Length: 120
Image (cartoon, rainbow, N blue to C red; front, side):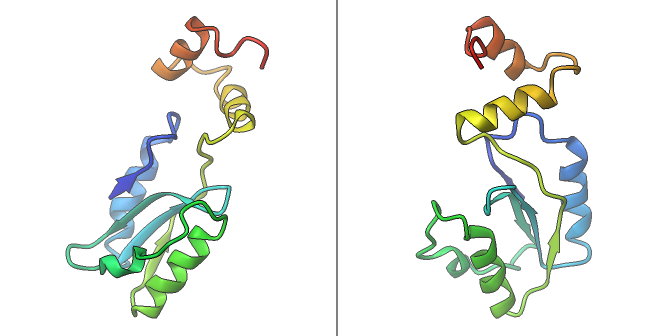
């Protein structure tokens, strides 16, 4: 299971769900909210790396293209619930709004103490 590094508030149960999803399918994918995905995993030997060759990683069709390639390879995919990552300033604003009433995570504390949240 591979997880993106730009999801500081990803709920831990998503990882548990991903591992459980691999009991039902060859591949598990956690879709982002921007056409990509925040998590992908597979059973041992269950995914050919050619699925990722010549992928346009900056396109908003990465998820759809990955799913197409997984299915074309004859593999079953288990989809997790979507979760947003942080790519642009608006994503950072959304992260802050989602986490205002939570105990400050290390990321939130860092952003506040460095003044990064000032003016957002």
